[in-house]
Length: 370
Image (cartoon, rainbow, N blue to C red):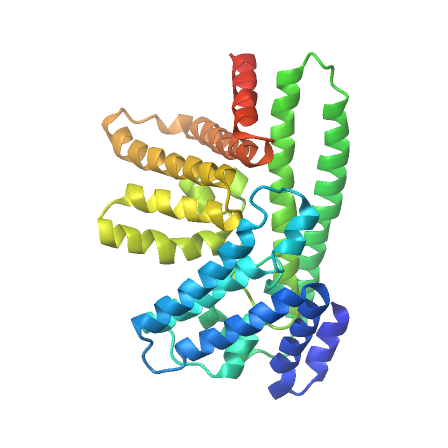
């Protein structure tokens, strides 16, 4: 990491991003030659489809279909196998992220919001090393703006190093040690007759782990980008402290939810005039983006129905008497508690051995609560 940063800033300004793209290509080739090849092909396809002053609908559709078929083809290979090694072997590193970045680029070109960019600029954007392995799905207009403004800035270096440190603390200290080891061992030592309590605490542990691991890796990506002079999009904004499921998704995996809002939700709603279909379609796409399987389809629909229920509640609650202001802190705490438990229970859908096992866990915990 630090060698890459040093080489980057020591290189002449006009060569920096090309050097970084080359280093990214070498890194990908050493880890996953399929990913290096696919990203190169995706970049060429994006350039050919988006190089004209006006991108035609035919070019857009052909390119997007090619990207989606490629992504789906690889993801179908792991649908029935949850082994981590097989997942990282069968799915080229970063494919889910740079597929959506390529689609974003072409959609912006097609709409006219993004002017024609040089091939070198597109290469620098798609081969930007910090965001390849685990995102975020940063936007090309922000990237090109930072590319023109970049300069050696000690405050950016300090911010970047600090952010990377935060990321490692989240992953190593909070997640791996405190949550997974200390909290996990304490749960394991509980009496066997406390099965419902064990199941509930395991759901809490998994929910904390998912957030700490994912946000920690995002912190590292954001920090590395700052070391290179770029400010990329934040991916998490205290999602477990949000008071409703819509606010949660505006704070969780922000780059993905924002991408789906722009390219799934808004087109569906503008076509059908139906926000319910828009919410369900958006969340199902987010679910299947992670993995094409029944469990992720159900997980996406679960969150979609949660958002729809929240939307209906927003319209219905205006007919109810308003709570006095003095109760606002209490209602806020209850709302946050309900939202975070809705999210944590949802993770059980994708963590359990089967949907039936997840349902049995819910029943066991609910009976214990009652």
